[in-house]
Image (tube, rainbow, N blue to C red; front, side, top):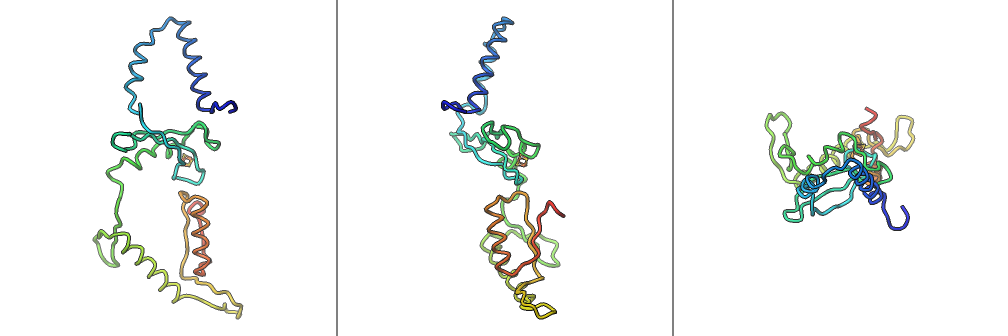
Amino acid sequence: MTSGLSRRDFLKLTGSIAALSAVNCLGLDLVPVARAAERLKTAGARETSTICGFCSVGCGVIVHTSTSNGKVQSIEGNPDHPINRGTLCSKGQALYELANNNRRLRSVLYRAPGSDKWEKKNWDWALREIATRMLKARDKTFKVKDKKGIVVNRTEGLAQLGGAALDNEECYLLAKLARSLGIVFLEHQARI
Ligand code: SF4
């Protein structure tokens, strides 16, 4: 919008005008509505704009965070965002549960080969383990030439699977990493 009026402000303003017109016509008492509005749980909350992390559509959302305890109070679609214009699909509407969910895993769980138990591990251990195993598999299966003697410098022992929650920059970095290791099997979850 021009004149410093955002689309969101414009919608609020026109909505208010329409509501006031309706109230005037119908002779409604707005006092109870005003009292309910005073009790909104997001009143005074800090608003932060970000994008939904569930898929690569990248819908814009506004996160309401309590200024007293820093907890997320609600998440809604951002009306000013050019991609979704305030709308969210059912996954986006459930974003709140990412921040407020007792069942969400918050640490690394590892199940050793042949074991029936999950062990809690820290990220340092997990990242080192992943790197060690990747390098071992890569070195074991690396091919400099194919059967015809053509130089290929690749491994067919590793594959990379991307997910819909990855953004452009993450996809770029992951693809670079995979290519630098000689991985040729790159796929995306949406195609399997
Ligand atoms: S999951 Fe839904 S709300 Fe989130 S980015 Fe994708 S389409 Fe948008």
